Picture (cartoon, one colour):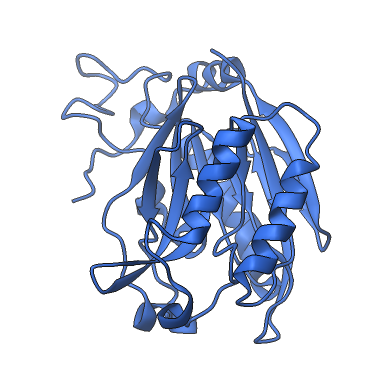
Length: 277
């Protein structure tokens, strides 16, 4: 039942300039005065949404991952965001979940954005990552994943997960797969209505908090990003949003509120039974 505090960094990015981005982000992180536990950066925070991984991708021992480790251990926080990563001659748009002890988990973006030819340069992931912090379960996803509700849907823990409410052992509303759905993004302003609508839908249908952290500003392809980073509660109510401006926002989420909503409206008990293979 412990609360969990996030700091969201909505920022412009220097195009394909790792050192400039890391210096800028470190300055922003150092400016956070509130006590925080998880810092969330946008998708491809070190380069922008570039299709040149041959030039800018690094290994899991590279400078950007080491920078995340330094920030996490120094600040005693979890830090997350996605990077270009090379592994076994493949390139991934990889979200890193860096812990204060220097250990990390990762999630490789499942849905590569073919409209921008991301699928020609990066390999799609095939496994979800649900991280844990202070008893909260957090489903980590990246940008275009937002358009695919099955990939985000609360699924079975076992064969009895979400059974018919008339059956034995009907699923309790406080024992679902995850509590927070988190997206990091470089989502263009031209499709920001879809961004805002789908973030809200994911919160309502999965009875979870949703956090979406997007960038702002123009990239080198003259694509403008309006930000519209959001925090949404399980009822679909917007707790925070900011458009067009750089912003650092810290918010504390309460597990008691989440459990109250799930117990009052146990809709997940009636969900269809399925598995992601």
